[in-house]
Image (cartoon, rainbow, N blue to C red; front, side, top):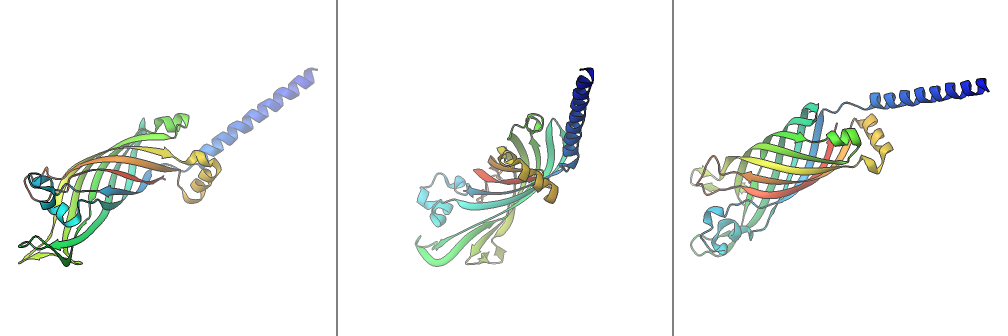
Length: 244
């Protein structure tokens, strides 16, 4: 009887040790989390008509040329996480691209002409990002809220056909500067297939994959108030993120 009990205790001890070893092995094979990559899209409507709010809608420049419709904005973002205690803090940069075309308007008659005109923007942001992923890391809660603060530089190009518009010796291009705030929520997708997530980490180095949505308030008239071109906006972005 004593030998049987002893055998059971030894077996349990060995099983526990093996389980602990396996757990530690899993921890060891998980690659470090240092970086984050995002690809995202958004319907984007710049507030170019805000300085002309006293005019009828049809006489406002953006509405008159483009019908007030949204542009499609695409962005990619790269984060480097330098703090990972109670959540993660990262420095980030992003670059985007958007363009929209319409028919030019004759300044004398106000009628549309066949000549195509367009607007192209390339928003570039330097950001500080905080992700509250503590609950995810400790309790496997798949939802991760986050906030971002950004300084924005936005090169823009006013187009005549596919070329940059010229006004005498002046070209229709420049750079606007502003600030932006972002509030977002991401859903970690690892729970859909844990084994696939581990394989993705061991083979490619991607720890976690996310779907996310974020709201942005962007003010581009802070450093040049009263100018006719105001690329401020309020918009939502949706995308896919990879932590590695």
